[in-house]
Image (cartoon, each protein chain N blue to C red):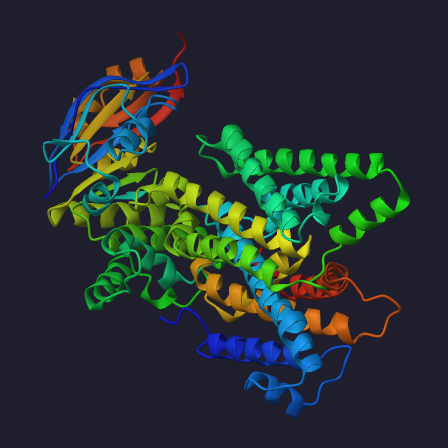
Amino acid sequence: MVTIATEGLEVRLGRHAAVRGVDVTLEPGRLVGIIGPNGAGKSSLIRAMLGLIRADAGRVLIDGKEGMDRREIARRIAYLPQGQTLHWPLAVERLVALGRLPHLGPLSRLRGEDEAAIEAAMVRADVLSLKDRVATELSGGERARVLLARALAVGAPALIADEPLAALDPGHQIDVMALLQAEAQAGSLVVTVLHDLAMAARWCDRLLLMEEGRLVVDGAPRDVLTADNLARVYGIAARIDLEGDWPLVLPVGRLEN
Amino acid sequence: MTVRHPLLLPMLVALLLLGAVGSLALGVVPLSPARILAVLTGHGDETARAILLDLRLPRMVLGIAVGGMLGLAGASLQGYLRNPLAEPSVLGASNAAALGAVAALYFGLSQLHPVVLPLLAILAALVALGVLFLLAGPAESPLTLILAGIAVATLAGAGISLALNLSPNPFAAMEIMTWLMGSLENRSMAHVLVAMPCVAAGAALLLADGRTLDALTLGEDGAQALGIDLGGARLRLMLGVAIGVGGAVAVSGAIGFVGLIVPHLVRPLTDRSPSAILLPSLLGGAALLTFADIAVRLIPTSSELKLGVLTAILGVPVFLVHLMRERRLW
């Protein structure tokens, strides 16, 4: 179980203020979506949470502790970065095995528990049948699942995924979201940056809506995805249907300002 | 999960041993196995002793050390920079070491003592490392490192050209040119003593970071989120390449292509992860250079063929054929 919190978090990238004063506490067992227009600071927020970029002001607390070292964070929070670029043509199983790095000493080999975690992660992401294939030769959907398996192999109690749905067809998008939801329901904290509002509405327990580095709305999807909020933050009109089990959101047009 | 073909390392070790024995046994002056054995057991004739212990032994040791270092440095840099075209000279260490050696030749310092030239070369490689740090130290992207390396290499190259341009007579220029072509001819145990500590330190620094190179498959953020300290890894890589390659070039001159092709040759026999090719590249580089050095001794030419020339001539076609076969993966 891991809780991630920020207090007055500010991040500057060069001169640009990417995150401005975000206070948020993310608790285990939830699937939390971070939404907002391009450049709203979503990726910067999660990268600061992971300690990949420095907070210029404020604090990031993981389980109430500040300034954890990289390996400690790596064992608590798995990270699925944006994009699918792989720099070497590794076999799928080797790629997934990279997820065990935070648990290995400098020269130690994979032990039984590592092998078990790797296999379990491949089963959960449904890539066991691909294990001997070369990861760079897979289709986009297969590769996304393999990278997800790599993140799951860490066996961390929290998972942060940056735009895991990019370049996936609807079927694979649903597969990935269902998997993230299953992780959350099993007790993990799952945080994901999303652009697809319909998917965010359908799957997330909680949404953080960001605008120009600020966290402007935080709550359940049906409270966050209102016509007002979408108009103000995205400048779009959307058809919103709150009748069913989960809200349906369909962006239909750009608003003139 | 097999990382390498089970026979890869044993084969390379066998190849290297064969090369080492060949390097002692073969040369311009034929020595019978009986005479060689006599020297090795401690009582041979004077001539055989001199040829074997003062000429061929240092040459064999240096061939292994230099070839191994170049192969390993190539494999490390290809992994770190995530670029299959990277080779030991990309960080400018080889050119800088060459400039140090050329300076020793140009100012006549190399005549003071045989060790002056390699020491100056190593010193120059370390100075170049300092410049590299100033240019690219704090930055995170590998591209900055490549650009800074190119700047250092080009500057050192310009210095070499300047020395050639200003050399007082054709013989001095010829001496510099000959050294630049790369060779292990006439090296002594003093050279071994200068080069070995550098190569050993450089190799140890580079071998330690296999995991980091694997993690970089996922990009910088991906690797750091796995708990990798990229700053430390980068420091070890820069130090390892500068000291190791600097030390190697200092005694051998510039020997091209070994560092580029050896990682490519061993990669198909591994799972292609950067860590899996480090040790095979070291062994393969050592074996390749040892055999190439035997070849230059045996090929009958009016003056001995330079090692760097042979590796380049043989290296290019091997590399091209290999790339044609493997290109679908890039």
